[in-house]
Length: 244
Image 1 (spheres, rainbow, N blue to C red):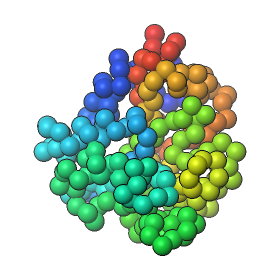
Image 2: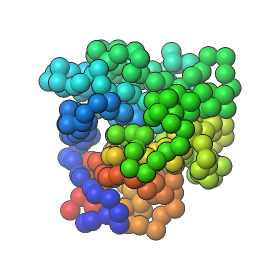
Image 3: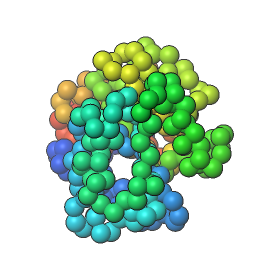
């Protein structure tokens, strides 16, 4: 079956999905020239992919000096907190590979409010981009890894929250809708990407994935329209009828 928009790849299990995602990241990074900016997702689904980045042969083949790592969203907690997305990425791969510290861009936290953290992170991304206005044909992100919750949220674009209508700022605080405040890239920043890959695994995501791939859904993940290519990497448990 063909999704209403984008392209779909179905894998036998979450491990095969992670391997394909890691291989794709390596392929695109090596094929690029100059700086390559990757937005990382949190949650359990991308963790095996991240761990594969720290293993051979990918570890020695990745052009670490050219790759920059930014956060698609973050729980507004200390990096040492087990809930930190950046902390998870560090434990999974960043602390085990020769990724320059200057190329790692966590969300500022110490002594800040979520709104202040979001404002400072927007400035970080603008410096990385080299401007404060996103331009068509010059994406902020080269590869954007995203997940999707069973409620259809992606990054921290949470159903019913005002952040869904934010089109001026690249980064916003999300103080409600979850147990902890969050900082997230907004639609304009997430959509400014050459390649966006949704990683979706597990039977618990099947119903929502079916809604989104069928078209007509208005959940946050379904509203994303990236400038570049959009792929869905899903395992058979999540794919359901789309696996045929």
